[in-house]
Length: 288
Image (cartoon, rainbow, N blue to C red; front, side):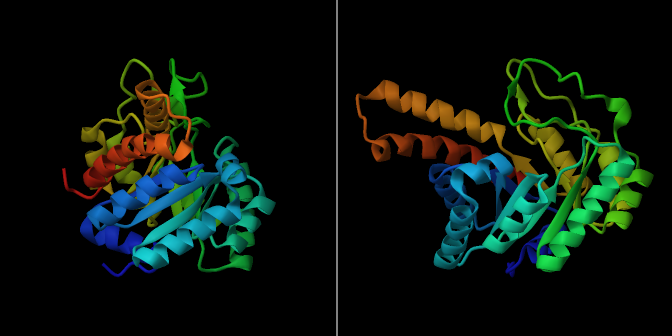
């Protein structure tokens, strides 16, 4: 597996008909769990930080953690600026050493989305031509959280068409595209997430001619995830499931003992996150 760059890892995923797992972090415990699972399964992995997560963990710290662990383990670990909207912050991420950036203008009308995304692509190309740029098309929500019901902004009538995706990719110059295909950020508390439009995914993959990314993977059934990957999805994003695992882990650790030392409590959190990541990576890589 020769995956020295994210572009090479995507090429490997396409050849193997699998998907890279993308997992968000805001602290070191989740990072340790994700890297541990990826190394054990010997598969590439993408670490993501949203603008908020990057501000908390610090862009330079996140980049240093990935760089050091990648070198120490000789393993393909990549870092993505997830759903960035601010061009200055995108520049900061690139200067820190991120491998890719998602510019998110999906909430805007198509014409505005194309114009703003193209501007972001031009900014990135001017700073580092090796960094991959992803754009998003179609609204899928904005927060990785547990949902009580369908957000009112989610409207299946606005799902992108193959022609719109083709035009978006061609006019913006993005390296990857994340279309709305029945997915959404977050996961429902008491019932399954909506089913993916697998037929739509297949037609969008053909139209895009660049890797297609599935956001909002938390809460989606294994069946739908397998079908999406078979249809051509090459990266799947998971965040809410990790946040739920983090909370369960810390709650159980606090209930089980009277310990106040963080490094004695956090291993329970790491184990919970590790179990989720390992299961998802096995699914994405055809091991389940």
